[in-house]
Length: 133
Image (cartoon, rainbow, N blue to C red; front, side, top):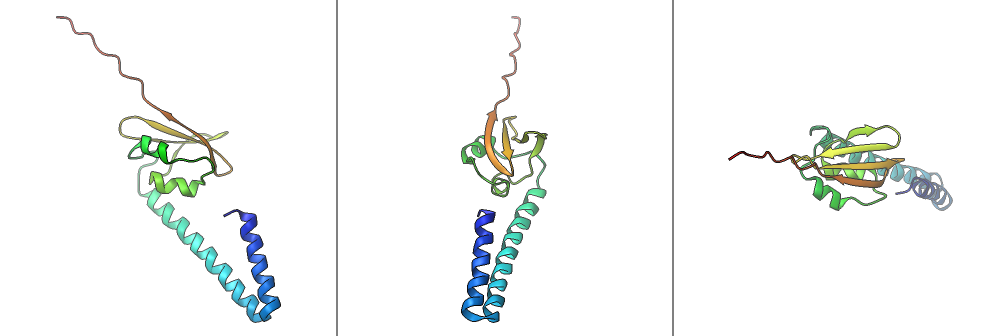
């Protein structure tokens, strides 16, 4: 959810609760807002714990990851797909990479924590050795 929308909803809940039920409504609205924030924090911690248990920059299938990516995804939405933290390739622009066992690599170009673009890089075919008969 957009930060501005979430903040506006929380403000509306606080003001609405205060106007309709007085201080008890404000306390109820504040409780609901804090509970929602705790749910978001818990989700983030679960995602980070799962991602921290895998090697950095490794993914089971880079092609499948490439198929599931969408522009505008947040990093917290990408991490459950990869099940690992990305290897930072570049600082500016923000580029993270994941490689699978076959050497295929997915590079995510991020801006402000959201995916702007990505690319699938396949390894060059190894040169075939010529055998003398």
